[in-house]
Image 1 (cartoon, rainbow, N blue to C red):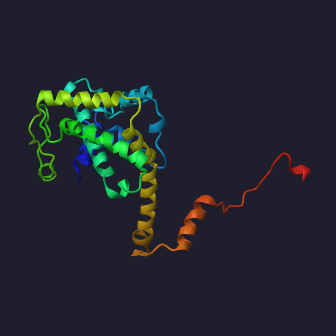
Image 2 (image 1 turned 45 degrees about the vertical axis):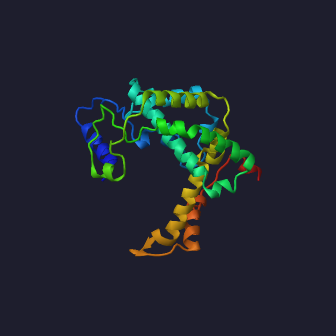
Image 3 (image 1 turned 90 degrees about the vertical axis):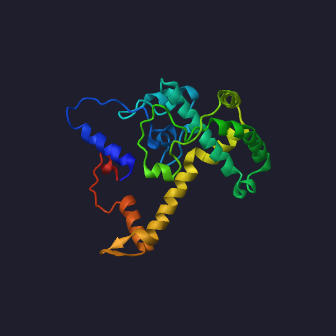
Length: 251
């Protein structure tokens, strides 16, 4: 069982006693963060059309388990810094992915080249502001073999304050820009995560058709007839329904 599932199970058990509201978490899990919360598993997320004021309100709203959906909303400065680190880490991964030949060779150069020029200017600052692996004085996370194996153990050196200040200036000015080539290209390619959602649904169907179906305790390939049966069960009405309308006498 994963650490996340253990925590959910423990929380569920704890809430069965006196019915009193428990203190909301402020150390966010991956499923608490805004990218997860805004994912529409059956279509396009509305993130690209949402105004910053509405988005800011949503970030601070939280739910019954967490106080908020971004560490930016945490009153503790160090926790707000976690959000800056997350932004930097993801932007680095984004820029590095865009440099792969599949993107470089297939995206219109008029879009691609200005965006990558912008990323290259930001990259050093993102690297400075990424705090993954740096210990937090108040971090009570138990060290595990998994954290050590996957590089999340706290063993990185602290950054110099002057380097952080310079990096912040660059990233802050970028965030304040009303328009950005890199931002626009990323939003265009994300499609509100619709392309990802469509890809997952399609691949899961292919996987199930060939490997996931069991009939009489034996694995079988889903036939077109099976697939049609399921579709008809959802879409077609096989019942005979008596119809009675006030205008039937006109027929």
